[in-house]
Length: 404
Image (cartoon, rainbow, N blue to C red; front, side, top):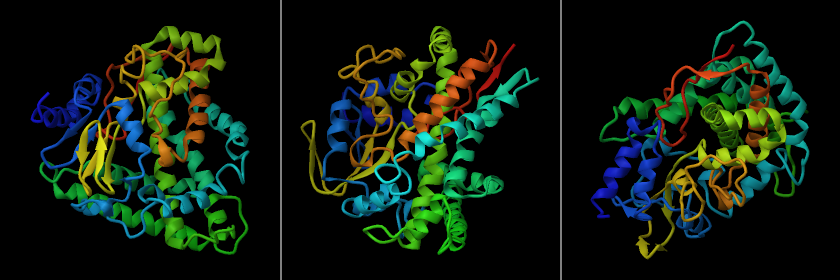
């Protein structure tokens, strides 16, 4: 494949017309594992090369290491730790993990199982008497939002406010100065400011006060590395609030869509609820919530698949393509909940492996098992459903189903 062909494939992947099924285009892209684009950036699309670079210490997550600055929407004085490199990344991740999970609070996630199940049951109870349901609006969105608000200590009644901000932020991630109005970028910049100011106000109320929510714990945690600064806490809360529900909404919705497209697997799950653990892992490979890491930087010259990527270059990682790579997975376009050795890239890999992965897994396991158990003869109203604009965080914006 020539270098002039791969930029065209990427443009087609990023175009909304491909949102319902980008996988044939990923197959075309994998013919050139490392493809230089017209703007000097590089796209990596094959499993071996993706896992290799995700574990490469010369790959930087800090956009300040790019030769060409990112749009203002991504310029942050205090980036969340996923936008930093060691040792700062490692320090902040350790501090964030203290109140969130092992080794300091090992039972936090699993201990939430009864509350998660009760929340799911309540949402499904609301389906009574409805012939048509929107899995997104009626279930997949309110469930993880309720959970992350409870964990962080964000008032649930404030959800309509930050929902608008989060949508603007996600929309601005895909900003293309050649094709998009500047308003798209400006809205994302303002939304970041508004969300940071909102979280900062909540944090001010938490200092030197007892409490079990994560904001309070972070504000008052005197661990071996001291406390985070207020700016660091706000950036961490910002990350958890967005990542804590956006990816889970997509995973649950993609999961239900996949089960409705595979009725034999849906029926099997109804009969074998313990299948859910392997099934969710296969969903993370087959229809992941995050398709693309749109930018990483080359901290120094990096050689990948005989291609030298110069220091400072922007690198785009096509995670969903890697998880469908036939060089790594047998019959990769088949949904197989019995798949073994399923080391997918659904939550990334390396030091930036998804911080909230255990919570997202448990939420999705409970959600899909309960939906399958309680919905009566569910059927898709439209296939494919309408999708969100983003090629990065890919999932249906609505998923209408009918039930008997």
